[in-house]
Length: 85
Image (cartoon, rainbow, N blue to C red; front, side):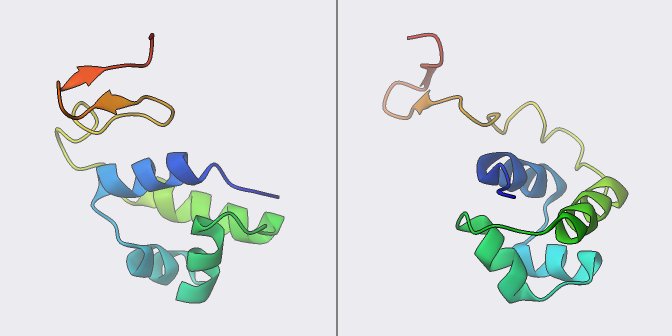
């Protein structure tokens, strides 16, 4: 199965986690995380390991409000949200 890569990136960002840290907490290789992050398929067990690692890692206070959710484009030159345009 394919992961929602943007969603995974956001989850890592709001937790201050790197791909290497995700690999360590999930008990998978960094190559597995890297492959998933470029859109390669992962098996169900790996998905569960990623989910568990994200669940046990707390969100950094204040990050949820400043990191844009997936599929929400920010106009960097104007600083505006273009998700409705």
